[in-house]
Image 1 (spheres, rainbow, N blue to C red):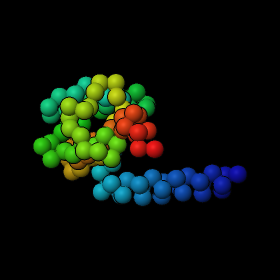
Image 2: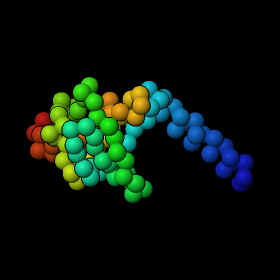
Image 3: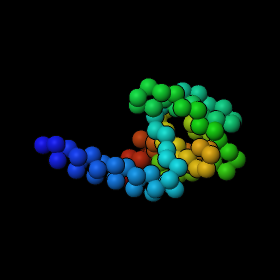
Length: 105
């Protein structure tokens, strides 16, 4: 049983490191937006931590597959922030509007 646990732990670390490298090795922040400002977002993660993510003029925003902007980010909304060098947001991804999502089907 101990050997199986060790193998599973090793596989989990391998998969996790591969996913991190898929985003340039800088990681991401996922959760609920608790505050927005011109220069940062505060995101509450699943473990209850508030993470302040710096924004830049080069930060890209998407709502589903459509381009969006900082004005589309709302307190209480979900967000996935892909981080770049120095922990600055490269990309902020928001869920698509349900009405628009179902209109295409």
